[in-house]
Length: 224
Length: 109
Image (cartoon, rainbow over all chains, first blue to last red):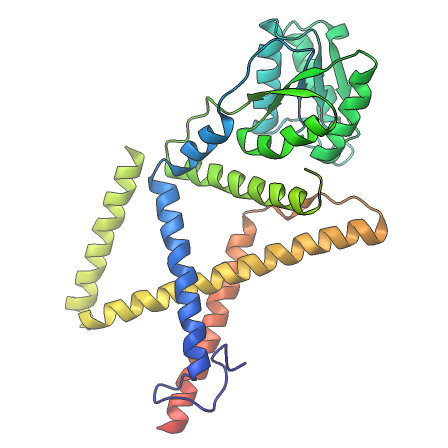
């Protein structure tokens, strides 16, 4: 408890124990790093640059399938912004003729419709033929998505995939699909997203930090 | 444009606060550095609580997954409310430490 400065003895004339002072210095250093990181993220293009670095270079080449990774859908069937971005990107790539098959992923939340079904409906409305759409709603993690897509595409002999997800997610998703036996071409869903206000830069940095931790976990667990 | 506006406004209100403190409230300018230090300590304590909260919640998710076989998404722990909760915890803890130091000084005085 003395490290925390909560001890009453021994203390200096200001009532702070030596170990408590050391604790203050540690807190001050962490606080300084936090404040500098916050200001640099909010008022500089650090987050968009880092995102761009992760997204580059998109490899939009003809492939055997376009695989759109899951995001989130509300119980009432509304896609999250990121899920919508990925879906639109996948549909655009299909309409550009980059693959004959569009694989849409994503499970359900709270007993609502599955994300894959909601996405498939959007794809049909935008002119993608129903027989070109494959859905998979059982995967709960990126790792499970790679396994299930492999099973789904194996019978079709698909070897190359255009992988659609946000740039921060790609360093984790790409090796998983490569391990599943695919040659992966990346198609980041957010390469055109402009984060030029402090709030959107902070939101983008939050995504990048979260994805860094996810990557680290997958790395430590030996998944990638 | 928005960044410049926010930075300029924050600078303006900070200068205003300095003059209010120094002139109207008679606060010592030399104590400003120590006050910034205290602010950084509180931010640091908030970040320590944030790290502790997030680490604990992820460990709980992993424990529930492995012990019960029930899948709980790690994204369940991803909520901006943790920042607010950690701020409250950090400020309260720092106030507690501050009061302990004050009572220690009084005892010696």
